[in-house]
Image 1 (tube, helix red, strand yellow):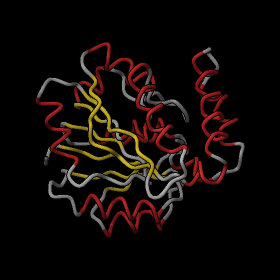
Image 2 (tube, helix red, strand yellow; image 1 turned 90 degrees about the vertical axis):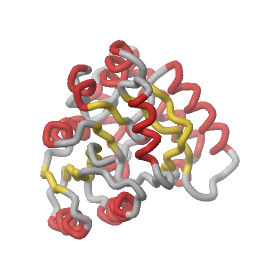
Image 3 (cartoon, helix red, strand yellow; image 1 turned 90 degrees about the horizontal axis):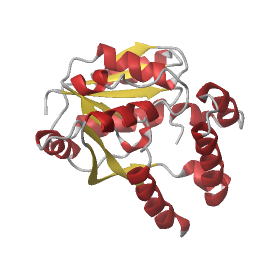
Image 4 (cartoon, helix red, strand yellow; image 1 turned 120 degrees about the vertical axis):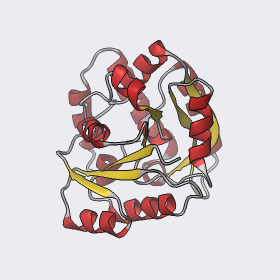
Length: 236
């Protein structure tokens, strides 16, 4: 699928970024381009990008603005947004192509925790799938869209948190936004470190506050205040 541009926001996460770029490089169907938008402006990140032929873009530390900058720079007709710690299915691009060929404007992958996990993991995966049907999937689920549909929907909001919410809602208002059956695996390290239910409850409190009208910029202070540098990278 040579018309696909992959856009990856990054912040001081070169080891996981390198793993993802290696996965993309080995796919049976290779995207037209990979764009890494680096909020830390690190020479180490740029070097990783050069090793895998990815384009490196410097940016400020705000995931919504990073994603917007990557989309504006992209040349592909399909935009696929990935977090740096994602593990991909064996050949995800044909699944994206089928969804778009069948009339979807965009879509997202099924959320799965990567590796051996504690017993709450399957319950949370089921709950996340339900939430996505009635609410909004988040950026760690590999959101993709036609380029024209992405910009018609207004793109990602220029926020550090919940930047995908208006995009997904607007895409659904414009047409079909499809849930794929294929899975994208998410690193469970934050749940394992903080506790499965504690992490989940913290995330839900932020989502409820956002739904009640608290600005994303204010909520980001609560989210990142915990001192977890991983959250600046992926923010699941």
